[in-house]
Length: 278
Image (cartoon, rainbow, N blue to C red; front, side, top):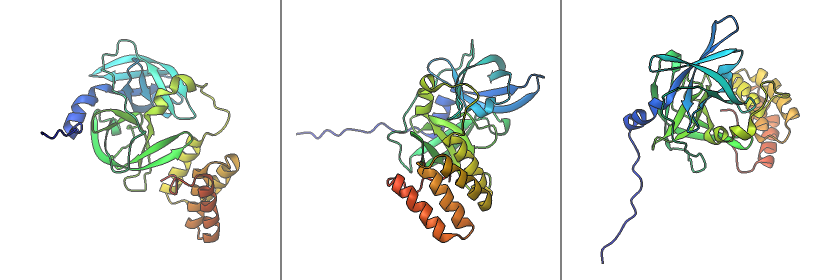
């Protein structure tokens, strides 16, 4: 009797992922009221025809342009979730093909990932890496990856080895090695339900995390401690806030306080022993 084996779907090579997904990645340019360019980032064409990017790429802008294959397209803000740093642009006539959306639900540490964006203004740049951690934030997880990103990469795509979009590359820690982060694709999919006004009434967990990551990256432990103390007061049920406080306490040699802070983090979320900003 012949044996029948179920064969796994073969992963694509880096060049195959790039060939499939690079056409879905665009350059996003932000201009102020005086017509001066203020931000340069990346974006990804979605199945609904809009372009997803990070909201911080669009900050202080009054008009936007999307550049694709040497041509500029007018863009307007479509939906925005400033708390999660996810925005979408309406770009009439943009011929870019949409990316295929994936999922982070089955993503594991060690999985291969590929970042495609516009670092330093260099269009369609590919970097390859792995998932180095999944950092719980709110009702999702930031993807920490070794796939390098740089200024201009914000809003670019992070893809799996089948070319499916896992998230948007969002920030990196400048003083550390291989500390790069992408927000999850599920936040993009939830954008229609979470779209908010541009001005938010309070600092979100993502805002706290971004600030903490910058301070930790520069090893400003005193600054991180001040921030984390404010974070734990504002969001006492946030495990990641207590982890940040513990790291800051350890950085200034307050070891007893560091242990107490990490115990509080584990009490809130026993499943995530390392949910800090790095």
